Length: 173
Image 1 (cartoon, rainbow, N blue to C red):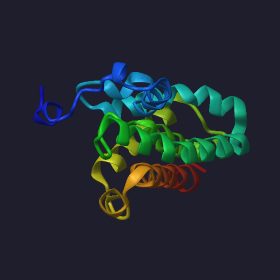
Image 2 (cartoon, rainbow, N blue to C red):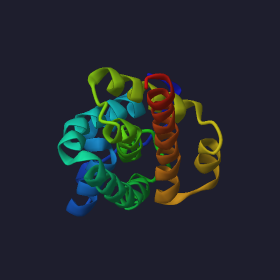
Image 3 (spheres, rainbow, N blue to C red):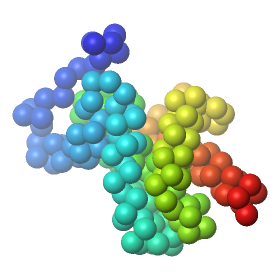
């Protein structure tokens, strides 16, 4: 068990209202964020289950759905952090769901979605989410609350999406 895990308070679902349980369950990525090791990676991997939905919806509807997911995520992440009394805890992975989903928008737009590119998108998103180049690091450090929890992952998703778009457009066409 690593030292970060030792300092995280346990989540006691039994002490929450039903509404709080539902929001926290969403915030921890339907349980994917409760992994004792690399919860962000597990949350991002769980978000790959949305890929068939994005394919069914197509580009425009996916943009709308991801926008709704992101707006709802501001509340979900903020409320989850408040209920478990920890800011931007690694167990909160709804932000990974939205950021990882943004990564795939160029593939939907260019109609190049396949499992190889999904894996590339997953890796790129995790690199940006962990590395946190500017302005991701700024958002992570300076913006608080649910919006702050969401913003760094949304920007990481945009960076990864930009990389995919540039690779697809300039190197593979």
